[in-house]
Image 1 (cartoon, rainbow, N blue to C red):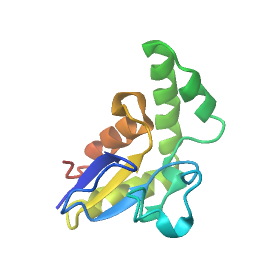
Image 2: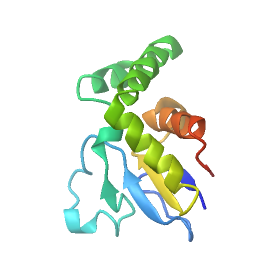
Image 3: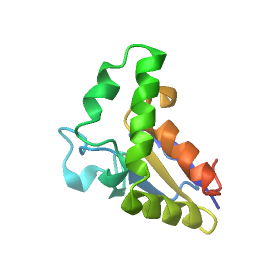
Image 4: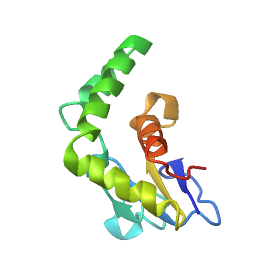
Length: 128
């Protein structure tokens, strides 16, 4: 059993399981009834996305240092008790069932899901 870190909208693996969207906004122009069918997500957890205040920092980061600053601030957001507990639950679930978490970004290294990967790994998640 494991958790996968994926790009939302990408083709699903056969054994991927439930897909969790960790994005601030649903996909534009897609009816809610088609989110899962179009491989975006089955359930939405915007709590695991960067805050609305932090999003501009990520979008405007043009250097590794600027993106590093965004990542540090996002980690601080994920350290809040509610977010930390949610990450603990996902890490525990990864040891008993298959599921995935994802975002729209093409490049994981320039996306908050790279931080989620690290935070889940710190909690002992089984990550593919």
